[in-house]
Image (tube, rainbow, N blue to C red; front, side):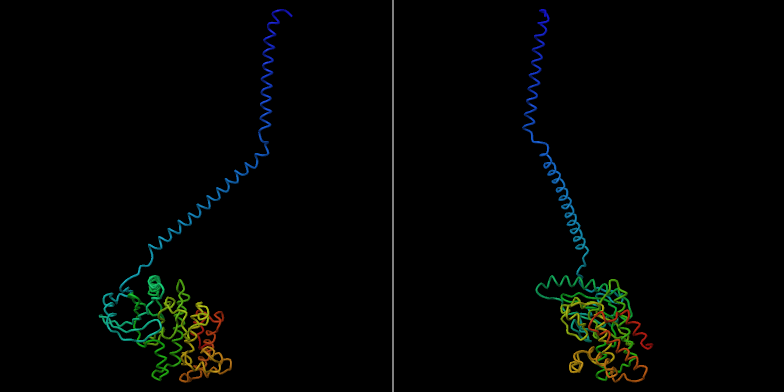
Length: 391
């Protein structure tokens, strides 16, 4: 090897050794990194935990937004109902052009003729300045402890809405509500005046031999009552239940055509469900559950009164062998084949009429069934009574 070659090889050898040292150093650093770094499998749980947190956060956010949306919608609905709630009106509310509010207010403040009374109010007769004769029913006060003011406002609004509905009803066998007046603690209802008063008054005069009502008129009354009831049950939307169908709420015009009064108002009275009237269906006394079949039961009692001439609260029924009520007494006589004995003696006459009355007794007994499901509907009763002569 010459001198020049040795000069070249020495630097080359030095550079080569330096490169090897650097490569060894890098190798050592890589080994240390592999030793100290956690193995790859330990990274998987951390990834899954993060994904789980993301999903949970998304679900919670969705639920929070959904609940907030519902609360906001309820708040908006509450505000709308509050803004459009029925105001408590003062003074006369008139539905007839024949009645002036000031004239009505003046007439109510004067002394009026008392026509009759019921557990929920009294009937008066009064004459307006224009000569129109009207009947006014003053309902009993609604106040009831322990919070009379709160209950009063709620009840008064509901009654006003009910009265507006009743004023819109048009049927021959319904009393037309002409106006109403909200006083400090009660309502006064204004109806057309009917000269013969209520069915209760008429039947009391019959029992005292002051009035004669033949089967034709009694049948007409029964048909009119069930037609009025049918209109409330099947022609009104929403359906209206009477809640207090009895002779005091059946008014008679000059032709003895019946008109139902106070439809649906009894459900707002404080003593609803506490009455022991002979016209109340048994399910109302047991569970305060009222349906259209409860109205049918009350009609059955009215039909029984028209046929027998007896008051359902007459002590006679408590002393009878069948015991207790008009319905049980009629059922007992029918099963014994003695239904004729139940008829009002003043009705017994021609054979054809007697057959109709005996058939009407059967209809009354079915209407007075203890179970609501066993009673016919008012829709079924209308043809049964109107075609009674063809049975």
